[in-house]
Structure formats: structure tokens, C-alpha cells
Length: 461
Image 1 (cartoon, rainbow, N blue to C red):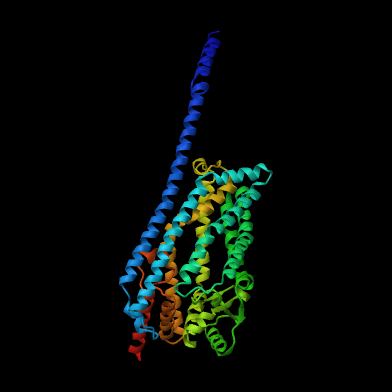
Image 2: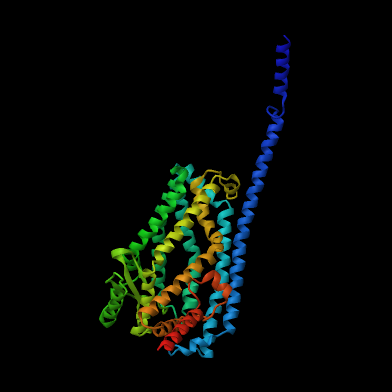
């Protein structure tokens, strides 16, 4: 009897224990947990806004420092190479061009930051997502629908800025030759291309996030890399010809470049001229494609600007990237970064405070992936110096390769000097600006290295 009573008493005590059964305390604890979660979501939102603002402030400060630095330090190296004379008038014009682009950059960056904050935190994304799901759309289809709307919206929002840049900056300084009809055609094609390529890739990542299991992040990284390689193959075959006329290179220049490719053991016979002069006076050359689709592409403006030996030096630089396997190394590095990024994403998508900051529930992986795509730019900006450091190292290697196969630095020096003068570049940007923005060494650095190599060659002779 005592045992029963004791058991009964202990049972009463157990039932009365507020830790387990007091409804008032349970509700209170639940509300406290919910409040803590809301506070954490606010903290996450504030942190991301601060990151966006910090990037905006730093970029604009760097741009102003770069402008002031370039305005007062015209490097004397430019006047010594390639017959290019950087007169005070030429320097002033280059600084004026950089000033116009800097001021334009301030407005564009501020607008981009405001639009990004509104998209992330105004509730428009959850409203669009819930609306499509409520109409019976699947989660992946709804996510792709929201992304399609975003791509179109951003294209429309950016069109006035792109118009001003093309017809009020580039045209004033003599670069843009784009007719209005071609401008709008390029914009429309760009949106269609983003939809055609971006939506399937987003859908694939969304499906993997939902159904790929514990290792979805690794598979997603592999899918993105495979997609990028496929785009590299398709670019010279389908994408570039959709925007530009690409005609086979002919004449003595073709024979000269084929000889160069043969000497460098570079497996390609396909060399094309891109009609860039329809749009711009800027010059460029590049190697694109993989395997049998690999091609050497030259802007027609480059052919008009440089002589044959200088063009050979520029193409030798591009071949140097292939010879040194820079694309393979960069692809491997990007794969590691993507894998790390998707692994972090897998954690964030199930963190209530993070998802709540944008108006979504934890585990809503498809809209979460969309949010991360939008927020990735400001977050990855802080990794740019490390990646650019590697890219600048690759560019130095390609320069040295070009000098080795063209028997000296002379042609490459004069080619770079002409291209820089033609593009109104500030020869020596501010070091901090270069750290964050330049994938190439500054022209002053490149010319100084080549001048040193040239002195070494003369010393041996």
C-alpha cells in the first residue's frame, strides 16, 4: 500500500513537474525560442546588409583612390615603347575617360545595392514563390519561374544604365560604334541566353538540393563545372556566332600564326576574325573552346591596330595560357570553391535564422538556393584578392612564354603599349584597386618585367 501510495505520490509529483507538463511554461518557452529565432534572423539580415554596404563603400573608395592616383602618376614607360607618345593631352584624356567611368560606376553600384537589398528583404521573393506554389507549381518549377522573372526584371532595370554607358560614355570617348538597333538586339539575345542556360542549371541544382541526399553539394559542384565546360565548348560554335560574324582568317597573317601554333605544339587550325568594330574600338584576342572546338579569335580592331609581329606576340601570350594549363588549374580551383560553397549552402538552407531572414522556412531548399545566388556576389567579393593573385601569376607566366617563343620582349612590349594607349587605360592603377579588381598585372609592372628581360638578353649578346 505504501509502495502504491509512494508510487502515486511520485506520479503526482511527476505530472505536476513544470518542466514537462506545465502548459503555461511550455508556451512561454516556445515563445521565447521563437523570439530568439526572430532575433537571430534579424541579426543575419543586418549582417548581410552590412556586407552589401561595406562592399559598396569599399569599391567606391577604391575607385576614387585609383582615379586620383592615376591622374598624378603618368608612367614614363609608356612614352618609350611602340612609338606610342603619352602626351599630357593623351594622359588628360585617359584620366577623363576613367573619371567618367568612375562616376558612372558610383551610380550603377548604388542602384545595384538598393535593388539587391529590396529583392532579398522586401518579401517579394516569398510572395512570388508562395503564389506559384499555391497555383500548383512544383517547388523546382516555382523556383525556376521566380528566377526567370528576376532575370527579366534585372535586364529591364539595367537597360537604362547600359544605354547611358554605351551612348553617353563609350561613344563620347570614341569607343562605341553600336547602332541603337544592335544595342537592343544584343540585350534581347543576352536575356534569352541567360534564360536558356541559367534556368536548366538552376533546376538541376534545385533538384539535387531536394533529392540528392547528404552529398548533394558535391554532386552539384560537379554539375556546375561540367556545365561550364560544356559552355566553353559551345561558345565558339553557337554563342559567339549568334552575336558576331566570325570569318576565317586569311593571308600572310594566317600563315604566320599557323607557324607559331605549330612551333608551340598548339593543336588548332581554326583561326577567326571577329567583327568587333561594329560595336567598339576596343581590341582583344583570345583562345576559346576545348578539344576540336578550340579556336584562336582576333578582333578586327586588333588587326587594324597592331603589326604582324605584335599580333604574333599577343597570340603567343594566349597560347601560353594553354601551354601552362592555366584553364585546367583555374577549373580545379573553381571546383574546390564551388564544393566549399555548396557545402556551406547545405548548412544554411536548414538554419531557421538564415532562411527566416528572407521570409522562408528552414528546409525550403529551392528558394534558398535562389537567395544564395543573389547574395553570392557581395559575399564572394571579399575572396577576389586571393583569386586575382593567382590569375596575375598566370598572366606573368603567359608573358614569359610569349617572349620565349617570339625571341624577345620587343613585340609584346609595343603591342601592350599600343593596346593600352588605344583603350585610354591608366598605366599604373592604385595598388589597392588593382588588388581587388585586376586579373592582370598592371601594364607598368608588365613593361618593367619585359624591359628587364630585354636588358638581360642584350647583356648576354
